[in-house]
Length: 285
Image (cartoon, rainbow, N blue to C red):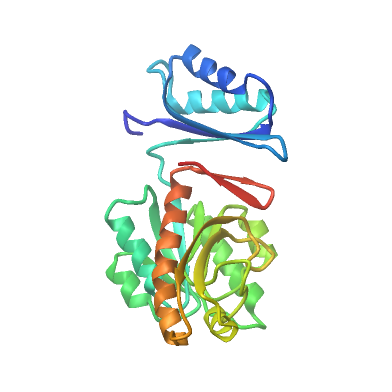
């Protein structure tokens, strides 16, 4: 654990008077020093959200202080998630054949943008095996057919458990993860959809967009749920197009959007900036 490790807490729950003061007072009384704090109130639902980051006291371990704050947050009636900077989650990237998001994520990680460990790449095709191994990342080819999909997902889940994976990133993985997979894994899965959801969910969205004659195309990064392309949205971006753009031009423009949208969503998740509430997210600056 780095000597400069900080504690980051995300809290959400029913709004009540004095929450900010109670949180800051607790940190002060424990000898901590707040580095950054931000909060938001959902006016319609009366729900309070907060992200607070602080350097802990030198007395006692960082882990003990993080655990103590989690208990404190629970005592306020808040859902409390606590992370420690310097603890790098283990990540698995799921891919198929399309490689632009795959390369972008790994190059950003190698450049030091992401505080994580990319432990492995899982694919239903062998197309990106050489690229993965050139990056020094283990590649697992697990073919999937309609008849044997439950067996393939069981193999994937066993692999994720063995490697202690904390986050799965679907980098244009062209398979639908079943509800059984998501429930069994029980940890976040981030997906990039090549459309500005909720428009053009499902397959071939650029073809759908071209057929509809839209003037904007987009990309959406979201947490995967059992409902196809309906999970909590983390980030979206758009590009302007016209009637002059072909499907191939829409696809080219869209791939740039996909890379940037997924990159930002992954970065915010790894920096513990996202709070999920019902089917929405609060993303702190």
